[in-house]
Length: 464
Ligand code: ADP
Image (cartoon, helix red, strand yellow):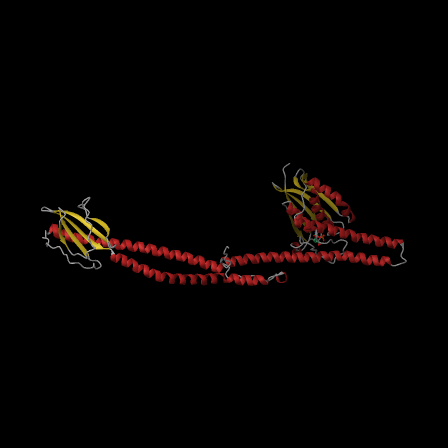
């Protein structure tokens, strides 16, 4: 069975303790190695110094050797030296002391000792380890071999002491380290608990609530800020959706109510055929309005779902504007308005002509609807940059005040909601224009003053 740790705190603590244990182990190993090298080096230095003293006595001062070979035995004390001097013919001339019977250094003269002092390490029959320095001395009268040995016992002892010390101190350090790791992990992760507790409270009913940002400079603070941004966007979309649904229901309700009340009145007896014709006429008007509303909503919802396929083709923009004006000119004529078109020929775009036509017709239709009788509408086509074309729809109406300019592209936004239902639309026209421009990598913008409004469509231009 696989063991899974779901708690980050414990996981962090375990990982931290493991790393700490490894570091402690590495520290102990390095220290033991260092200590061993240091003590071995000191031992060699001691032996070398001793040898130098003996060599000085024998060679420079030519001191006569006491003809002693100490045969008394005793247990070697720490740092005690064991000196041997042999003649050329390997006869033992001097021995400082015999430690015990077991200590008999092997006298291997196979390669002979050199005139340069050399070090040797021995393990004797009793298991004890020794270090020896040996040299061959040449004087005017005789040759001598001098050997000084010292037990390595004290090194082993000190190593053992250090090891015992570390084996007591390391677990204590490990426990302290592990506990500190746990406390640190708990402290560091505490904000997450707070954030999670707050996030649990956030739902559709209280989307205004936000996650606390404890320190905006650290990673968790940054995460909380990013999540809050996400909540902002979600709240905005949620509110848009709510408004959209209630606005759409509202827009449906009015024509349906009108149709019902007109129908109810029409059902009353004793009315003339003229009257019934009028009733049917106004019902059809409301029906047209409803159809238009449903068409617009369908287009926008398909657009939102990304289910609209563009049928792109290449066409001349000025020519296209003329076609659009031809379609809508009847409405302008009814209001005694004039529409003029000017601009450069042979500027092409690759776009879905049907959708783009709808966008331009929406703008011209608005210009007709929202400007007074007898006013003038001007449409111009120009190259904005080398690779973009601009279509401007300018009217001479009353303009749109600053406070409305930003909002008129929102869905269902109308400046004057209680204006005549015949002239005013449902507030989806400009939202559709904006969406059509977006999917064509274009933009729609507005410049308006009290002398009129100018809507500009900008699209990527194609070379002829
Ligand atoms: P509608 O379907 O109501 O025309 P739009 O989205 O096309 O909706 O327009 C939103 C609002 O912007 C309109 O209700 C109108 O008040 C205002 N508007 C649009 N075009 C013009 C214009 N050319 N002049 C003045 N107001 C305009």
